[in-house]
Structure formats: structure tokens, C-alpha cells
Length: 327
Image: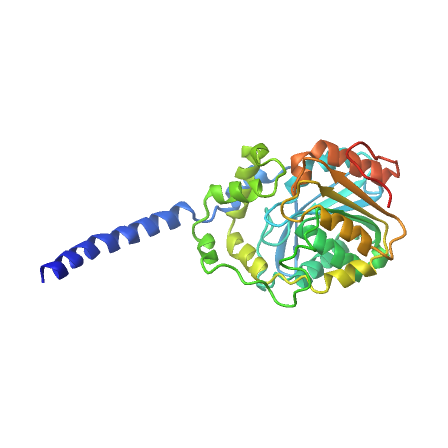
């Protein structure tokens, strides 16, 4: 009887304590307001456009009559990751970039559909709204997979395709016709999402984990704390199916540049050579390997990667010590 009384006393203390901790954690990790995020991360060049119920944040830099380049960011990232690329290109090129649904300053998709098919459909409608009919497309990581799907669907729109560390051949997702199962605890991240989670994620993508800047971690964390963005991102991950990506790569015919971090821990560099071999219908294909860089190459060395994309788009031979050229 004494033991039962002691147990009841312990539970009477423990349960309220856990409830208080849970409530405090939920409050601490609550969504940031749209106004606060816009005040910090929007610029005078930020524009907003509603497409199919999604309020897109985008930027459109450079001369309107210049050759157009569309930049598609990575999973969990935002259009800000391309800032130095835009600086390198926008004197000559019209550079368009947008935040995907549930990323950056773009709102969630009210349909709840975060499949690649839906992402490409929204991109098509976005491009139509901006009257983008012929352009170069650049995608990194998840953005690279979207760029592949978009190019297959709209071959007549694409001048050149640039893929920076595309995740399409990742062994865990390639060739799947159903989404990969996620850990049972993953939904906790929709309620409690510490900054350390983004620190860990970014360090896992850099060639040199110690080189991740604090401001990048803070930006990724804060922008993903937007209204229902965490739920949207987990839904995207839970709905991710790449389809017959190998067959799609084989069908590509646009001139293609593959840029790859040699120390990429997410999609290893051997996949870069496999990717090039799969481009059997691409007459003009080039491969750039970057020693020391990982999956986040555009963030790790924006100066060099921006310089090289400019040289490629200009039609200049840009191969250097860190590049392995025409194949």
C-alpha cells in the first residue's frame, strides 16, 4: 500500500511536470509570424504571386530582354542560397528564382500535395505567369530532381540544363514507386524543432562540416519556422517518389552541365560519373568536380561555383584544376 502511495505521489508530480515542459517547448518552438520573417528576409526586390492557391515569393533580376536563367533551390533551403550567383549573372542575364511551396517566404500549398508532380505543375504555372518560354534551368539537390522532371515535360522550353549535386540517384529513393518510410518520431519536428537540427543537417551536407556559417544555420532554422512550414516539409518528404528517374535521365537531350562536390556525403561523387554515363542522348555534356566541397556546394563556395556557371552560360571554356571537363 505504501508503495502504491509513493507511486501515485511520483506520478502526481511527474505528469504535470511533463505537461508543463511540453507546453513550454511547444510555445518556445511555435511558428514565426509571416510579418516577422518578411521584415527580416524580404528585400526591395521581393515579389509575390499567387499560383493555384500558393502565395509564391520570388525575385526577378537583371535585364528583361537578356537570356533567362531559372534557379531552383534545395530541400529545406530558399532562394537566398543563390544570392552570389545572381550577382555574378544579373548584369547580362535575366535571373528568376522562387521559394518552393512551404519554403522561405512562400506559403504552404493548401492542397497538401507536395509530390514532385505537383511541384513541377506549380513551376509550369509560375513560368507561364512570368511569360518564361525559353530559358536555362539550374537545380540543386531536390531542385535538380524538379529540373529533370520539368525538362522532360517541357523540352522545347529548355536551352541548357545545369544540375548541381542532384539527389535523384540517391540509393534510398531512386527507382521507388512508393515513398520511403520515415522514423516513427519524425512528426515531433512539427512541434519541437531546435536550431541544432539544422546545424546537424547542414554539417551533414558540407564537405567540411566545421565550415558551416552560423548565419546560414539561423536562416534555415528561422525560415522553416514559418506558418505550417515544418508540417509541409515533412509532408513533402513523406510524399517523395522520384519515379523512373534513370529512364528520365536517359531521355534528356538538352545540353547539360553536371556540377558535383567531390566530398558530397549525401550523393557520393561516383554518382556524378554514373549520371554522365546515363546522359546517352545528350550530345553536349560536361562534368565539373569540386574538391573539398560537399552537397551544399553553392553555399560552401559561392564565388567559384558562381564564376563557373557564368563561364558556362557565356559559352566560355571554364575548366580549371578543380574541374574534369568534356566527356
